[in-house]
Image (cartoon, rainbow, N blue to C red; front, side):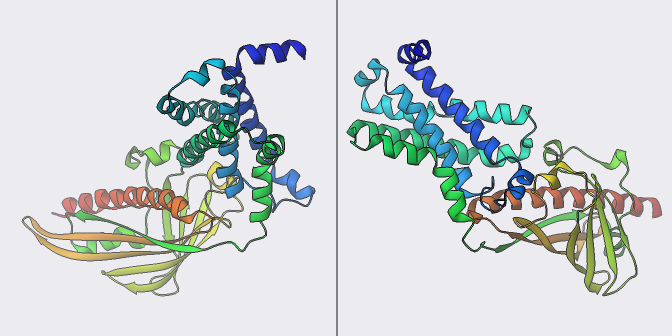
Length: 345
């Protein structure tokens, strides 16, 4: 123990980086196993989507990084500007390190880390600046402050679990111009036959692990008809038709059936559950007279529910995901409608 203490005294910056990275990994392990938490009866207290974890853990990591770095004698001679820059950017090292280990260990998907990344970097920088401010004053009760700070993610998450979950709904809209008449486009949206491998195009969303759409069946035409929209990973959305006006409007409510899904997206609680859901979808076909004949401007919109304590931030990502997905579906419909129209001519 004495040797480790001597090493830490000689290499305070490395020690700060090391202790910060270890702290981040320990926090992720603590918040990792929902089944273990459930057996202990505290499954609703500690969750990775909490403000306590997403905001508190990187704040503490940034603080620990700079608390170690401040022990370095040379730090006392740095200019204020260089000290601020160091406090902002040095904590990013442990953040990236913990993300890499978490990804390699399979604790999170790449898309989850990308969504959390900006928050982690911002809060770790704020933690570094907080350390710079606190350590410059050398408070008498510093030990108590540090202990309280270390337990901040657990305390914050526990308090947060007692508050009512906020709910916000957001609309996402995409459109595409198709060289085909509205009736030809309608045939491609009321039912979607299995999308073949050669029709599946590149998408960054799917590269990050989000499942591709496969097909959509329809039990019967008209209001009350049920569409079964299937995605990779055995993900099923049951869509009940609420508006049927061919060839103009097709709207439906959406209920996910995810019990049989093997998708990592579902298992990681990104899709479905209490944090995010897709509630409604709607197609609107707008006839357009183009130079080469009748065209259709196809609109696809959806209503999503986001339920976190930082909806302003999380909805930016959920809306991006839905926009990417809707754009992907519209491209498949465009390709099929234009090919069918060309074949008839």
